[in-house]
Image (cartoon, rainbow, N blue to C red; front, side, top):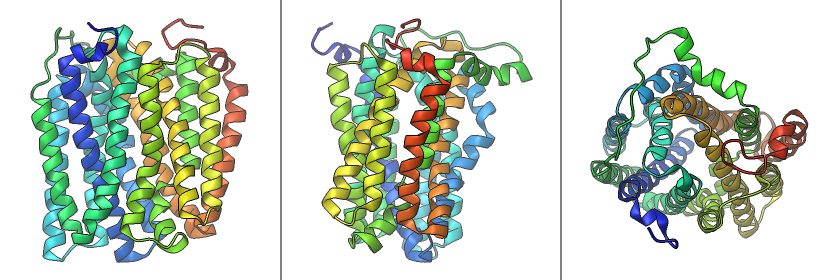
Length: 407
């Protein structure tokens, strides 16, 4: 294995990486098209927030079920079923858009369906990654996987914004193709060793095992909850259609660039982390990264300049990427394989709460106070969370290394 590119010898991991890139790009294009189409239909910040809530609710309701599924069945097959479901949703959106009968209710239904597939996809995907690389390569693999995902998050919204000029149905058609391409890559993923699947009875204790595991490990609990509350308060994704149209005065192409900007910063940082993994002061680095996220969100909220807004969103992506790699490494390295599905399911709810529920929170506060006030208050709230969490989780602040037992 080459010292320079040790991940290139992990062929199944690379195929899985290609699956994630293709399907993440499809998902990002879907979100641009769904958001713009909803705002076109209703001109309502509250309805934009409802799209986020509709995607989050299934993840919350299915938390205990999806973890059991990921720990009991072959994760590749579970992931394949999730992607097939997303392709069916995209096909429904194609039909509704080209036929001209799409409505607010159809978009919300599609959002619930996508949220249901993602509820199973996210923990399964997270739990599958450590099965494809040696433990020593995991932080680097997570950074490399994130770089691919962030590339897709850059290209997806930009492509979605430009293609939307030809119509929402065209965007949904391209999404369907990319999801099917991801399924093709996934078919080539092989596991060197099949893990022993959980065979204990499905009891209340086994269902709650993931929650109990995280609660008992304070650095992991601190890292996950820090990400939850900072992004819940500081996220501005749901309001980007409003910023694009009403504050920065651009069209769908501008929305595409705005949605892609955080991913540009995250992509560049993930490339750096792939070559220079975090080896010390992991806790302090994570808190500094979240503080950067809060400050950049605050400045974005006040900006009326398109280029400054893009820069601030890119910086928010830098901070978020550092936080994501540290959090995911802590969770995966400290969790045994037979628990990864349940722990990842709980982690996914936190991620979903911070993203989709954060979009709902943004929509509600924007409807009440206006978009600018909503984003500015969120940025200030993120900085407050950083200060409070440093007091609540001193062990996380002192954490030096990402590996289990690393202090």
